[in-house]
Length: 137
Image (cartoon, rainbow, N blue to C red; front, side, top):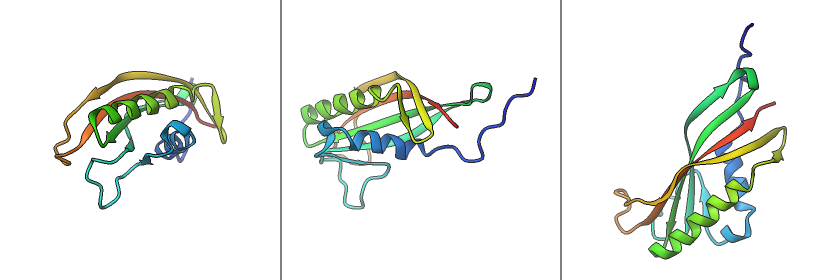
């Protein structure tokens, strides 16, 4: 039996997660993006979305990306509240179809945890990693 090859282009999971988070009213006052703007200093409400690996399961046609959420706030408490809101919104995406793709499961791998940011010295940052199970068709 041969293993089906992955699609010629994977869905942009980072953009998909950004869309999911931006649609959540609890995150409406935060910047949600894959990259911070040029003037970002880590002290404003923001959720940065990054794919940090994962695996393609060919026979199931499933992409399993690890999605890192870097969450910033003006205070440690504000960052914590925002991190929990982002986590909740992504966990709630399980069972929903986005275009031709279906998120069948979202599983927390790590976090959210307080993590000092060495790039932005004044930042209040929490980081979490969630595994997204995405049926790709």
